[in-house]
Amino acid sequence: MAAVQPWWSGTVIYQLIVRSYADGNGDGIGDFKGLSGRLPYLRWLGVKTLWLTPVYPSPLRDGGYDITDFTGIHPDLGDLASFHRFLTAAHGQGMRVILDLVLNHTSDLHPWFQRARWAPKDSPERNVYVWSDDPQRYSDAPVLFRHFESSNWEWDPVAEQYYLHRFLRHQPDLNYANPWVQETMLEVVDFWLDRGVDGFRLDAVPFLCEEEGTRCEGLPETHAFLKRLRQRVDDHGRDVLLLGEAIQPVQEAAPYLAKDELHGAFNFVLTAHLFAAVASGSTRALGNCLQDAQDVVEGCGWALPLRNHDELWLGDGHLIPQEVIQTIRVGLPQGQGHWLNWGINRRLAPLLNGDPRANRLLHGLLYSLPGMPCLYYGDELGMGDWPGLRDRDPNRTPMAWTPARNGGFSAAPDPLLVLPPITAPGYDYRVLNVEVQKQLPGSLLNWHRRMLICRRLLPALQSGSFRLLSCAHPGVIAYVRSTEAMTVLVAGNFTAAGAAVGLDLSDWQGQRTREVMWGCEFPIAHDDWYVYLQPYGFNWWLIGEVEVEGSETSSQPPKATAGEPSV
Ligand code: NOJ
Ligand code: CA
Image 1 (cartoon, rainbow, N blue to C red):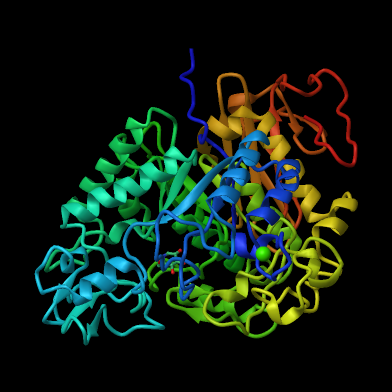
Image 2 (image 1 turned 90 degrees about the vertical axis):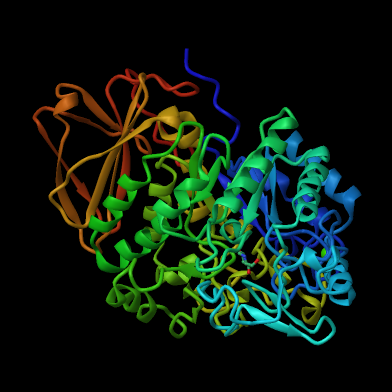
């Protein structure tokens, strides 16, 4: 009998920023009341896990990743009671909720830091953070936010020492060599698990510990702490998802995925290769990357993002060829993409030149790969951005709900809004919003919903094995996902031209293929099976006589209605 899968296996994660999602009290800032009111939409869309970017008290100098109280709720968003009401309602609608948790650092306004700087040198209070008299300490550790900082150290005139900050200067690093820090952060985890959250997206996990002469990334002490964290979570006796953010090559991110460590980590290399494949029209590097990601420990999995609240990471020049990066930037409408730290600070739709075919292609792949596909709020609509905003704000603007003022996000006067809603040409909320797209059968929103229904109906896409198929066309990727009961074939064309491709389906000779979306059938008569893919086209096919639970059987003619998939 197949082992029972944890709830998060193959789950589709919807990432949202509470303050940009829906304003429930009319003050211009999204909150838990507003989000609770939008749960029926999320249920309708078919996402199963909600990932909330940080919701804690914070001066918001880094989008809430600068925390002043790990066990509170930012007053703009509500309080612990409104969070609880939201969580209960989300659970009631069949959704799980994971919180962003920043282990590595706090805000410099956190009481721990204020206490540390006034405390005597080397005292327990001071040692909650990492201090030095010499800013050359750990000089092999690279500066991560290189557009904002030139050093990992900042002089504190009160403490008369430098403190370490791997990110912004107002985000001092916690000192994980101090047992108090470790235990206190584990108590934070207890606090939220006791309140019913289903897991954590763990921010910046590689950087917890430091050691001279190293890059201070993924050190054994860091893994040892994460194992303690896993043990602590397991002690709660329920299925909790620990999902780590390690923006690194797959080989370096993979060690976090271990039976006794994290359940998941983001595959940002895949994200970069997906964009590079669209820009270059070549899938060779993408194929290698997909292959590399298959070697995961049982019980662990990759989370698969396209975009998120940060810049699109494209690596340090070794991952993606410079000319491909240039192609992605030059093609952008409304000015070139802003290069920030390690990538481009734009939303998905503008990065794809507003081409919904490419949006469908990338999501079509994401929804059919092993792992946990991540959908960033607004990308289900093809929402745009405001490239002129500071830092990473261009892609953190309010969700577009209706054609009404402020896109239905808030009733507040414009100057009070958290960020300006999108009115850029081609992306104006008066046209591009949930209400309008719900009514149009061919909209991107209805397409996403339909794909998510198909994914739920096809267990092979959630937990099946993965096999890349060789394909002579350099711009096409093809693979099969199989369980004992079913095989699903996926093929996608990353070029702006149509592609006629032959695939070796000799293992299934004599069987039939049936399009998942529209139900059209093709026999597999010969070793080579030919298919035509439109520019940026892709498709999913069921192979063989498969009965799909909750749908009609393969012997019946497929029902190609406008709204629902045919499987
Ligand atoms: C990673 C987060 O995704 C990013 O938004 C934040 O600025 C850094 N960690 C620092 O916390
Ligand atoms: Ca509000």
